[in-house]
Amino acid sequence: MPSTPSHDATIEAYSGTPRIVHISDIHGYIDDARSSLLAVGEHDRFDPIVTETDGELQWAGNDYVLVVNGDLIDRGDGNDACMDLVARLQREAPAERVRYHLGNHEMGILFPTLYHWPHAYSTNLDTESRREFLERVRDGEVGVAFEGYNYTYSHAGANEPFSVAEVNTDARSVAGALLDGPDNETVYRRLTDEYDRAFGLGGNGGRGPDAGLCWMDFAHLEESAPAQVVGHSQRRKPVRKGNVVCGNIIRMNQGTSGGEGVLIEEPNTLTAVTRGRDGTVVVEEV
Image (cartoon, rainbow, N blue to C red; front, side, top):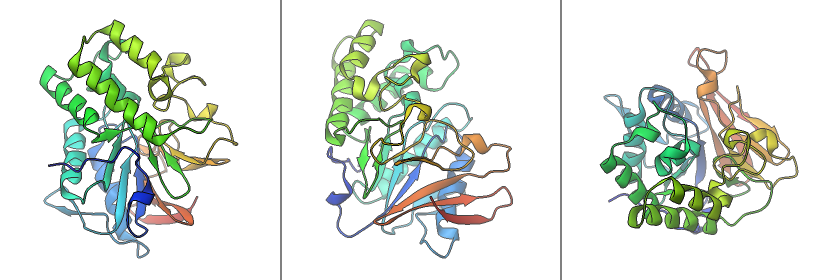
């Protein structure tokens, strides 16, 4: 059975001091996801978080927590493979070591008719696949936020402090309501309004300053915001704005001079591990 995250979702629940690996906005680019995760073990500073056999990644068994920080799907052509990868790592890793967060594209699965994405993977799941995903959210396998050593992780972030436990519980409540009650656009709008801390759509097509943790653009995060690691807004390399770091660098770096990568949080450091287009792996403090 997959490991089920606890709803308080804090690094304090783990024994020792496991490193936290952050990856976000994979967007169906399975080769880039594999490359990013494998890069962790290709530098002598870090043990591998995954290994590869016959093109398939497995949990390597080292002391890590992996945070897949939203937007796993859409854009690329490896959506099913990306979903399978995360589900498999959740099964293979010790309990609660692989945490998958909802992003705005996962919101497309929850509330499909709210979005004008006619050809997107998220808004076109068949009934059974969508139900299975909703069950994963209801059961806590897919959440909204996680509390690290010095940073809180969510897809898009917030300017005010928020309760990780509450927003993860809200996600379970929303999924339960969709599974057990009416499932239509009227219900979707009621739920996004009622649980707006996580799911608020905001203005400007869902990226405005009043949007929730799955939607707000990095441009609206203030330097004084609580310390957070977010994805959502494309960047060529990890970018720090005051207390907040944006680590969405996979899709931006398709065909550019940049490269795919992850962030690694330890008790006193936040590090970017990036593979350049020439295949070399670079480690830099953020």
